[in-house]
Length: 154
Image 1: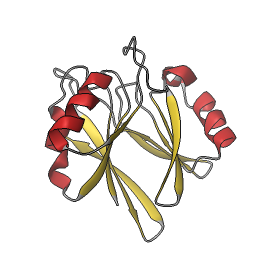
Image 2 (image 1 turned 180 degrees about the vertical axis):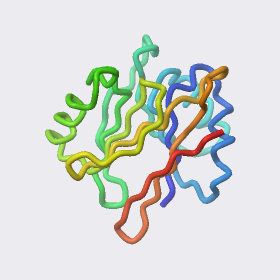
Image 3 (image 1 turned 90 degrees about the horizontal axis):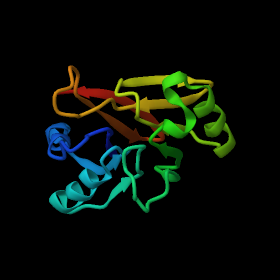
Image 4 (image 1 turned 135 degrees about the vertical axis):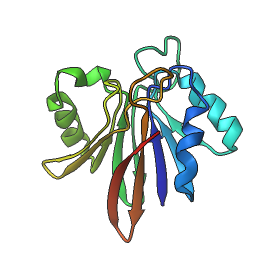
C-alpha cells in the first residue's frame, strides 16, 4: 500500500497532484491548513481522502485528530498544533504513546521530517504552499508488514 501524505497546502490544492508521480498511490492523507484543498482533491482524484483540520481551518467540522488502522499499523493523524510541535515532539510523543500509535503523521511546522523516536515513526510531509522555498510531501509504503517513509521534494 502506498499513501501520499500532504499538509499545509494553504490554497495550493493542485500541488499534491505533482507528488502523485510515485505511482500506485492508494490513499491520500491531508494534515490540514486548508482542509478545503483536501475536499477539492477528493473530487479531482475521485477517491476518499483522510483529512484533519489545522489551526487555519476555522469552522471545520472534522475531528482535529484521529487514529486509523492501515495495513495493521495504528496511525495517529493530527495537524500538530494541539501538541505544540513547533516547540518539539515531546507532547506529540506522549500523545502517540497514549494512543498506542505505531506511526504519527503531523504538519504545522512546514518542515519535512522522517524520524523514529522510541520505536514510533514520525512523519511530517512539510508544506506545499505556493511560494515556499521548499515544497514537499511524503510517501508512506506498507509492504509485507514493514513501513517505510520518504519525503518527496517538488
